[in-house]
Each structure stands twice: as structure tokens, then as C-alpha cells.
Image 1 (cartoon, rainbow over the protein chains, first blue to last red):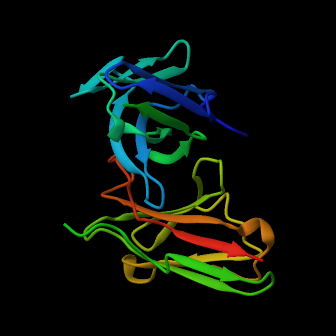
Image 2: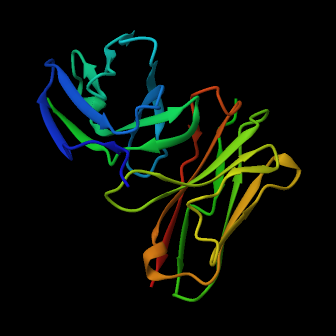
Length: 111
Length: 114
């Protein structure tokens, strides 16, 4: 039962443009969401989070948007840089317990 | 601050053999997680510890997988006997507490079962 879905396995974007990565979830009890970035042969590293009391959270070039009614969140990277090329996972949890991960989106930023 | 340490990084075994993975979390982190990541999929939680107690092991295949966290610090995950479908990266993560949010991951242990 895939409670967190990332329907785009891959995304290519030109350097300097906006990258938008999407994530959908099915469990309405989820109240805390995170995005992780993963380079090959490394563990995932934390990028940005958002709780259900907010609909937007920004950190530099990264912004996460949450639409609770649609059970959808997205990660915006502006401007995209070649070093952003990686696999991005979204994760969701209830009260920070038992994180469920999506299948990941591989982002390629073309110089 | 030292990160989450895992070993070995790579392991190749034949089916029906056994294997063990070790994880040392970030100092002071009470919660420790073991995730299984099969190629092309997202990490799947196998077991979650709070100190040395099990919080959730609902997705751990208990007929062949076992995990312990003695003294509430480092942890071992064992597979015996291994099956071909156990080929995956086993990720260990830790966090300060169960409701503190961010998980810190180790580099993972890649298992290949032949």
C-alpha cells in the first residue's frame, strides 16, 4: 500500500529555470512532511520540511508547498543548479513517527 | 558532529546464507530506524527503536529478519536465511526523538544476494 506517491520518476530542467517536484499522499492523518535529496552511493540528506499548520515553507532556493485538501505537496527549486541533480524523495508522517517515503524523482539539471 | 555510521558498505552473499549490518547513530539520538531500499523504490521502514525498545516492527519479515539495539545506542540488523529479494540497500537513520522530525541517514549497506 503506497501511501506516498511520486508519479514522475524523472525530470530534466535547464540550469537557471525552476524545478517542480510533486508528491501525493493518501493518508489524511499525515501532518508532517519532509523532502530528502540523495546522491548515488550516499544516504538521503534532509532538505526541507513542512507541518500541516502551514501551506508554505522557504529555505533559500527551496520552497515546499502543501495543499492539504488535495493531499499534495510540491518542492520548487529556483534557480536550478547542476549540483541539484539528484534523486528527491518526499516523506510523510503522523506526529513525526513512522515516516513513509515516496519512490523518488530523479532530477537532472542541464548546464 | 559525527554522522550515522554503518558497516559494512557492501556485502555479497549467496541465498540461504546469513548477514549482519551494524549501525551507530548520532550521539544523543534516542530514535533509530532501519529502512530497506530496493532499487527503484523509496525507503521502506523495517523497524523503529526508541532507546532500546521497539516502537514499530510491523513491516519486518520476522521469519528471517531480526534487529536489536542493546543499551539504546548502536544496533544490528540480521538476515537469516537470505533470499534473492533481500538484495537492497539497508539504511540506518536516527533522530533526536520520535516527534522531532528530521531523520539523519547513514550511507547505507548494499546487500547483493546471489
